[in-house]
Image (tube, rainbow, N blue to C red):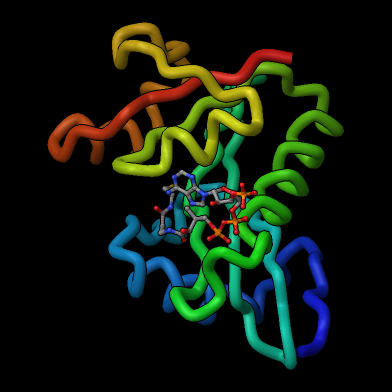
Length: 144
Ligand SMILES: CC(C)(COP(=O)(O)OP(=O)(O)OC[C@H]1O[C@@H](n2cnc3c(N)ncnc32)[C@H](O)[C@@H]1OP(=O)(O)O)[C@@H](O)C(=O)NCCC(=O)NCCS
């Protein structure tokens, strides 16, 4: 089995990223949302993605998805670690996310569960925050 290549996504990865997100039932970012992505690529196919957006020095980690057939092999942890490195490299020290059922997974990276009302104000303006106002989900915070 060939190794994964991890890299920052380019414009022509977007269709594959959207396909992965739809397949996992996660929100697909709109064209007006400034989301950046790390992707894992194997044999020319995007098999995992982790995205982030920055709002006034606070990051929102989102769109973390691994193709179903590739789960459990460590690639999810690798894209998350790379996205967090990219966030820190931008000098952003507080990151948030919302998850339906992967809180234990994200806990491995130093995310801690917080109340929805404790999410930093700039993040509350994101579409992700507003979507989850309706559907619920567990908010988490990581400080560095
Ligand atoms: C959650 C997800 C990204 C994990 O990716 P993955 O490649 O399967 O995870 P990894 O193989 O890197 O797992 C690393 C470790 O986390 C654990 N883990 C994986 N998913 C987990 C979950 N949902 N809850 C708790 N632990 C989890 C693994 O067992 C593994 O533990 P180990 O190191 O002791 O063996 C993947 O299952 C997925 O795409 N799920 C659907 C979409 C989703 O829920 N995204 C998160 C919300 S934004």
